[in-house]
Image (cartoon, rainbow, N blue to C red):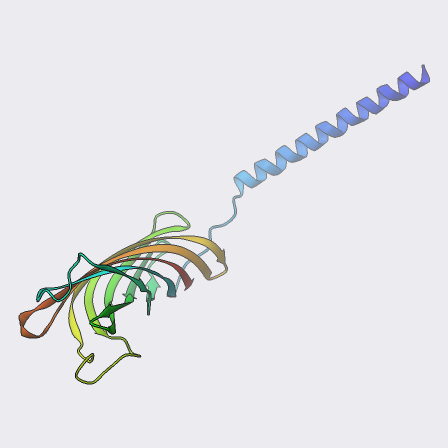
Length: 205
């Protein structure tokens, strides 16, 4: 009889402990739901640089190079400066840049593009703008009278990214970017470019 009573008491204690644990867990879960983790504040100036690569297609109106032949490219440089207007919207200046080969010389097709960036969700943003296209020799491959011409025109840009890591005012994101541009050449000719990149963005905001 004594052993049966002891087992009954132990069962009652275990049941009471289980009930207490359930109540505590429920209270904790309710507190977490009613007090979610605060969303990081975004304000002030922002800066970002990107490392990555992609593809570029170049076509000249003179027929020297056409869109039929694409080539791999690496991002250099790819910078962004801006200022947060509120927690979701920023005005920015984007400076995309991609190295490509033209007639055995390395050149850079990039731009200086006023733009806006909007956070659709806490970690997902979209970014776009229109501005100046710049086609220039790569800084390490400038050759007098061969690869020293600078050409300017118009470019449009659209990109999107997702922040995979955030700590304080730093964020690491994966992003993709599309740039369409046209620059004017000597003799009323022009050069068109279509660029698609994928990269890692390192941003401070």
